[in-house]
Length: 410
Image (spheres, rainbow, N blue to C red):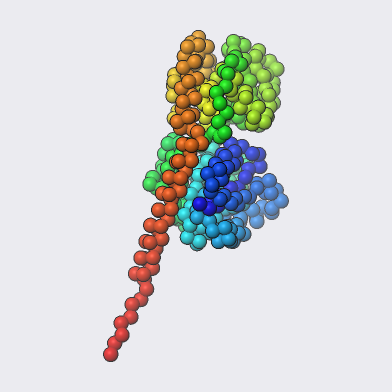
């Protein structure tokens, strides 16, 4: 199969970029020919604002180039990951014009929220979910702290909602969790057009030792990731279990200050993926204190691959990924006292910790390994191809009904 993958890479590489790389590598390993059409958001500052706004709505160059690639590479389908802002929804129309199916993976909430995370003023926000016009986001300048930039994204969403792009130009959407799927369905994505396929970890890192004796946080140091809750909890644990923090972000200075004051807390900054996986494998448990509606939690399944239990906020995707007292523990989002209580519960029960390690590894093997993911992806590609073929047949029949019929008269 020839697969054309479209992805607009981010300024700062993150989990979404990593998932795209993993999936394209997996396809190639199974003998598929993968061609990538990539835009890079590091170019944004070079583009005049008016031009960038127009490209966000419809990029003529991307439309032309993707059509050419489909024809030249004889692509069997188009798999889109991110289009904002440089690729634009024009790529869907390019595939439609060439008669190939389109799959869109929904890594974030951009389709229903201009800032893509459904988070504002240090709390989850769904003000724009289910609305025709994302006006609240414009009023609050949710995207890049700019009303103009937010207005451009809101206009793009409205334009393509009115044009029927989201309903008629994408054959199947992939949501990484049922929680995310429900969010999109509530905003108008046809339920029959969206399937759930979780992300995966590859290569298999193997089971870690779990003997490091520390708790670990890996992620962006930002408000939505629950950093304040994490630090508040460790200020009360008073060094009973060391905490290592990996990552960078807008709250880095706050984390650095906490690491200098709180016993047992250390900030390691950004680390290479191989080192992060080693830290995960040695950790007693991973902390996932996000207070946002996460679509997924890649670091959770990375922990499972190493047999490391996860203590996570009971909100968003984590509620599906973490089985309470089996693969980890769930805590009330934003509740530092509950986080302390759950950590103390785990520290007092080493036998539960051992059983959780086994259950976490089993969850990875069954649900989040490369083999399971590849099978699911192929089933999705087959279903999208069938839907596109059915759409084509309906289009042909509709066209035939509009062709005038003339009968010869004598």
